[in-house]
Figure (cartoon, rainbow, N blue to C red):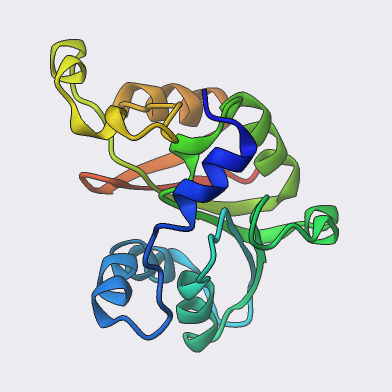
Length: 176
């Protein structure tokens, strides 16, 4: 596992430019499906793990939502972790979580009843496929997920689950 300093150095190599149309198109694969399931504009959201260029938050704000950002390196304002949100999005960050159960529990505490989680991460399909999978070669990627992982979490924590793309999952919390 990398030190925090080495991990930050890796992240600083990313080209997450707010004006990059290719990056915007990439993030639209998460933003589009999320916006389709949100019942209205003006909802509060959290871009968890926003990175150095919080374009996803900007895109959702442009669409009429109110979005706070949090990232342990680039937006470490813990006050945003003291309130609840209608939705939480996490684009290409969950695979960096050293203790994903801890972050998942935090998300559950931050999510308002009936709220939505929108996650973008590559999923492995089989253990055989995992062996040669390029995604696990990134030294900052330490947690990996399959469809079965998300099915288990959705069932355990009372979410409706939708696999909207090979790397995008939307979980809508069922109201009690």
